[in-house]
Length: 403
Image (cartoon, rainbow, N blue to C red; front, top):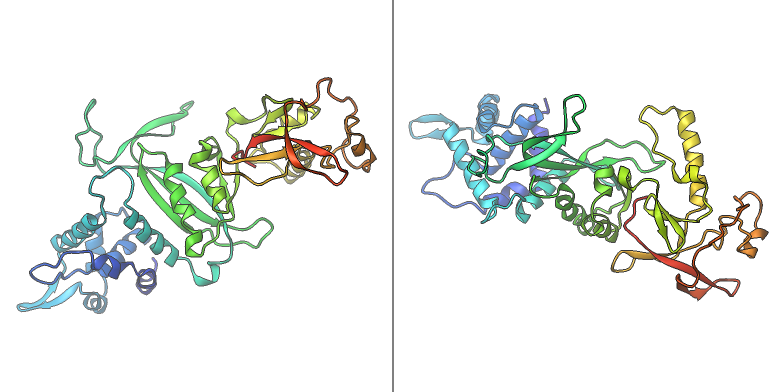
């Protein structure tokens, strides 16, 4: 169990208790349970991995040592003697807080004020020595069932009207997914930098939304707000569920905030997927039409891959990168950038590009040039002449493709 002083320190460091307290109405008599004590009780329950029922919050507070109960106001002196906090009083303070932080019209997404308070509380839980240890984050979402029973078929009448039906991984043999009634909870946890020292995998940001909403879209404003509060974004690791999102919903706003996306491609996007002005579209990028098929069809490593298999896969990946059309501009306002042929960039040797044949033989060489090379008459000019005085040809390609 996490010691109470540590939980109180997190609450005080976040500064959210007084910010919530000023939002609550003033009653006829003072409330015995303050917001600070309520938050401490909620953290005790969550830290002990118990169901976060309000009854358990009251139980956690009333079972503290007597000195702590008096210090936190769980035991207060009334005119008839000491009075211990009741569930009704706990419910009263919690209800006032919930009403103050809720939206006027609930829509399944947290109010901006509530999300900001949660962000500050999570950030306060990061020890000072680790706040700048890494800018990399790993993100994912999971299912959280609602406390309420689902509504009857064809109705929305239930105790939790913001909850909705969603899909999660199936638990039965051959069952890809199953329905559940509740919410999607997303988390962004700290990860070590590439080639950097290990860091504790602490949750830095979290959010929850109804299953009526896309969890990736709900997490984006939370992540993009971090740089404004002095927390730069680095690599963001994600699975294929994020890579398959509309670029405007995920990749473009994150890259505009300084993030680098490192994510699995969705199975539907892997491998060759047609051509663009003669270049092969594969794995979300453009490749030379003479790229070996085995490299274009390179699949992700298995979870149980051996170090030898990982090294071989890395070598093939590096070889594939030689044939990739290289970026020559940053993303524009619409998320597009310009790319150049690999031979023009000096990554491969190609007879169709005589200057590239003077490169050292450590680079791959195109032995059989394509019969129909990149359509020069349809490609867009990069604009500026290269060092040899020739204008390089490039194609616009979406900047939202994954690494």
